[in-house]
Length: 115
Length: 114
Image 1: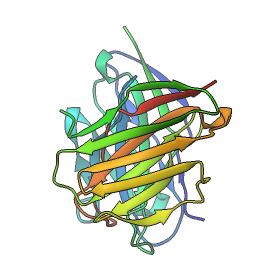
Image 2: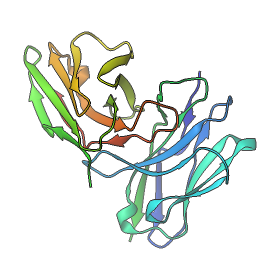
Image 3: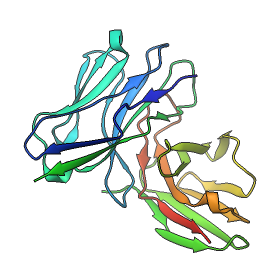
């Protein structure tokens, strides 16, 4: 079955440090890939998306992600984390074999930022 | 900025009550979705509506009944719920139903079943 895996349930980084959140998708037709962020008490906000073309995509709030087909990965990065980045991050994918636009979500990674 | 508004934000109900969750989108989208978010589990898609027609029901128990009277509004009618139904219920919308359509989410309704 198609799936999205986020290996890290919880990550803590110091403010100003760099960040990388991992995401792996199950092998198959190239999926459409998304990263969402959820702050406490709020819904999900789209950070960025990858459909095709340049494998390094830029998003909002200074985030970027790189699609690597050979590793079935779509990791999210930020060069310098701010305290306001503390939130839960979800990687999601829709696959080419489906026409429903059904998003398959990973379990999420909770980011804690130390002062 | 939230183009998708959900009410109420919090709801506590007994197992024998009947209540409804409401979602309204102001984005001119044609597809709407209900998701369930439980602790330590991935988001679960419950229902998909496209142009006011239900196009997907992911084996959701009949105690959850969706309604989409027009493309801007989506309801989730609840009755005889179980304690395991306590969760955050998220509504989302997209321009159309499709693989490359980003979904815009509301802030959710936190539901607690006593």
